[in-house]
Length: 104
Image 1 (tube, rainbow, N blue to C red):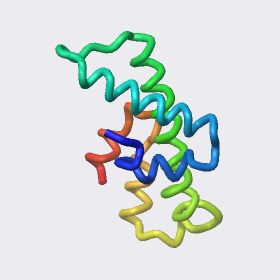
Image 2: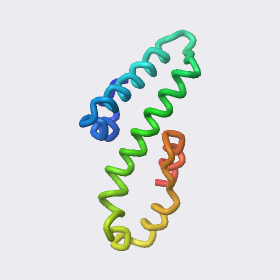
Image 3: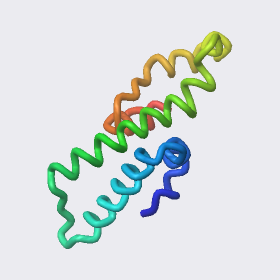
């Protein structure tokens, strides 16, 4: 798994060196965890990965979905079904990604 496998998240952090380092570090930790037999991860590493990727996921949602399609009067331009979908999706960190995916 490489950061390029996640182009939307990568494009969100590429201009922020600290966030890019956090993103790359999280991916590297995930890779090292997957390669262990049996796979195991320290709780502190899990929390760091979850928090860093969660913040990046939230920012990607903001940059790629909310701001271009729903801010500055654009919300009213969307069909009613899309407005309802947008209201039903609450992106709060990485944990909400599966719920969001299922709604879309």
